[in-house]
Every structure is written in structure tokens, then in C-alpha cells.
Length: 281
Image 1: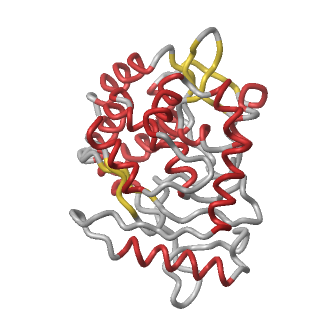
Image 2: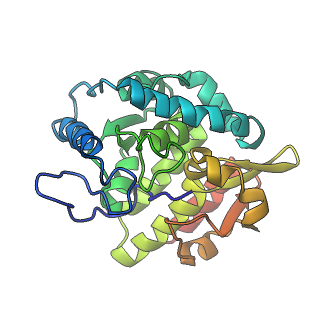
């Protein structure tokens, strides 16, 4: 999967009037209609203020088709490779597989269960902003979707990543507690430690694996929302037992498939080990 994590800092604008960044190799870079659509959705997010109703996006038929195409490919993989906590969360959330759900509707289920809510943002935000919001039970989520020419690829977090990857996990108390750990740590550590925290987030809540029923199952949102990454990790990645200190020291490349992934015995043990490690930082 070629995916930038939401902990990546924002980059410069690509042209006059642009709110979001599209690099020259982005599938939608040369599509003026897509660029305009991205800016339109970004304007809606920028107009949002905490306490207001979360804005709804009037998605087009083309955007819904992209969403459905992703689910057609990911759904079968989830059956065999997603962890049970994630699949239970999907059932609780009732994610529509044909039409893009609205953040407001997700919050109606998430917030009463764990306190978490999805808050719209225009695009990539600085890592400390993204992570520290987790300590306030807020997940900063984009609402735009990837370009229709490459429905199984995105160079940045989009609504597919946010909802298919993350939303269902916020139904589960253990995931809520894990996210709060990162948020609380981000609010107190210095910049050098923040880089380590980003890596820990990447190798757990984005690309983490757990052992279940004698096999490897994905709990990380980056894996769960990527057809390419989820379908190949068992044969292409070096799987190591999770060690917080080692993961915090290992740089990652968000532009390529992951070479190393970490596996935990269960999510409660992950929470215990992360809490103990972060308490020393």
C-alpha cells in the first residue's frame, strides 16, 4: 500500500487557490474536476467548528462507486485476515459497503460506546495535532475519497482509510484506550520523543498484527484499508514479535509496502506493554 499516515506533517500547496496538496505523481493531479472537488470538501471541513453538527458530504455516484469497488476487494480479505475485534466493530457500526457513510452517522454509534468521535479535517495535519487529539477522544478524519482511476491506491489518508481502517476500531474499548495512550503521550513529550511515538503508532494502530486462532490477523488501519498490503503481508513482510523500544527506533517508509511488521499476542497485552513503555517517556 502506498499510504501517507495522518501523522505526516502538511506540505506546501501545489498552486494558487489550492487548499490541499496534490503531488505531481498523484492520480488526480492532472484532473481539474478532482482537484476542485478536493478543494470543495476541504472548504467544508475548514468551516467546521467543534460543537457544530459534523458536516455531511453530498457524495457523487462516481465517489460511491470507488467506495464499493474497494469493499468488493477488501471484504473477502477481512473475512480471513482481520482480527475479531475489528470484525465485531464493523458489525456494530454497520458500515455500508455500497455508499460512503457520513462521519456524523458513525459518531452516533461510536460516541455512546467509547466516547470517541470523528472530527472532519481538510487534509494532512501535523503529527502532534493529530496524536494529541486522540487524548481528547477525537479522531481527525478526512472526508474526500481517492481518484476513481486507481480505486485501490491512495498516497494519502482518505475517507476509505478513515472509515474502513479506523472507524470500526473505535467501537471497541481496548482500541479507545490504545488511542488515548498515544494522545496523552503526545501532549507531554518533546519533539525527539514525538518521532518515536509516531513510529509506535505506525507499527501498531496503522500496521499492527495480532495472533488469533493459530494465525496472523490485522488490527492496524493501514493494513485493514489496503487491498494490496493486506493481501501480501504474510509472504512479503518480515514478522517480528512486538517490542516497543525496537519499534520506536525503526524508521518507516509511507510510500512503499512495509518490510517489517510487528505481531502481539493479544490487544490487552499490547495496551499493557505500551502503557508501561510510554510511562517512562
